[in-house]
Length: 458
Image (cartoon, rainbow, N blue to C red):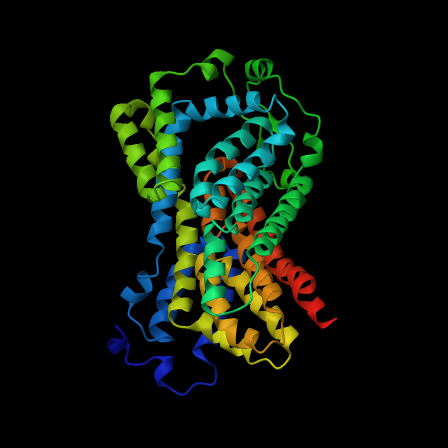
């Protein structure tokens, strides 16, 4: 196709580098999707094809190769499986069992979800796997008991981040491995503790910002509550109510319906347990494992699976897939490395350190945190080896900046939260996660830089 067009910006003299053009196009995509009613992912796919062919001079097949097939399968598989679990009442049973487990103290549930995600990622689970397993139950609980879905989603995602930098965690292993292979000084325990603290503080902020204080003292008598709530709404933030969004308390039937474990529910629970064990213990692919369980349940109980495919969040999948495809094009064509190289050439060490943290945060909000941790630390090695910036503090600042932004709806974890929100709240959850994600992209690098890098110069 490039030959048909006959030219690309790489082959001609032009006043603006292709990397700058590609970044500006991405900014335009965000602007257009913000002011007009169009799926941002669809627009990003079109932009990726045009930029790939005309700016980078690559074939469309190369652009398509950046589509996140793994993320697509995860989102389809998990939302399909939990649509079936919702249809047959298994999710309802899990939610009400959770209420009884915390003795009806609703304010404890988000922290339980945080702790569960932190635990499983700390012992080696991949962060998206933990979120994929916990998010559907957590978001179901939020819908049922009037907990703000954005707060619950942020607690789940930050919990997964908090545990990931343990010496056994995936992010911790990657970061420590890159540090050691490049002969940089490191501190595994400090890395884990400070990243856990950073994620925990963001979780606390979200808990307080989205109604956590109102949950204090709220105790649900499960039997009375389930029987009595035919419908209702729970208030979210003032701006959510003004925009017409609702944080639904959900609907209920009689208590015995929720407490009864039918054969279908038992097999569904076994399938969910198999998904968790397969993903966390044996390293099986979350998406394909979830699809396998969903297909087996569909074959065994076709009535409950009716309409489950329609409940898959196709709009979310298109949105995330399009954005990630565009960012993958930037990575494959060296735009991210180009940014890193230019930052490393900045004369002022403190400014360069801050810019590197910003790059980690921005790119990770739209792409793989694992890839960013493995790419940016090596790019910063020549800069760190000069001794102008303390290496341990810089690495930890970069780790925090690149990981706490996983709540962005364009990352795998954030996308899972959006996909598992109730349909009525999905747009609101997407907007709020995007707002929080972009705010963290700005705040996290500045705070970690000020706390971990600047003191070296004082």
